[in-house]
Image (cartoon, rainbow, N blue to C red; front, side, top):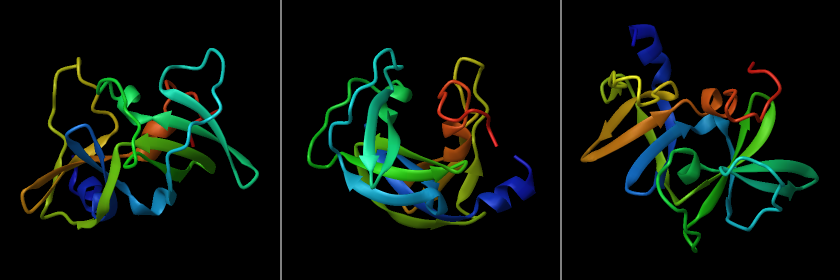
Length: 157
């Protein structure tokens, strides 16, 4: 990762939990956080697209990140939340196991994503953040949500 990319990645991140891992996304992409409520299912949708909800008159697709990242069978409990995102001028909800907090990462505690073999898709990983004893996988949520395999937006901006 070039120095300019790494510098651009520093900032505030909302951290959330999926399974045993902690992830971080740019706080500026987050519109709100809601408790999980079962969405209206859509026929023939990919497994990770749980359905849609009506959010104050806006139909919002709901993506289950545990299914998207192949992290096992999702369970929904009192800690499960939906993070409402504003990406590429589109409102999208993502289901996560729980929200941790908002953290500040800078170039001192943010490292580039490791270079794995082609079997592991790291296109959406900005880097790995370290904060005390915590390791946070920083995700480029806009790049992920606008990717062709998500089919959420007509054309990536």
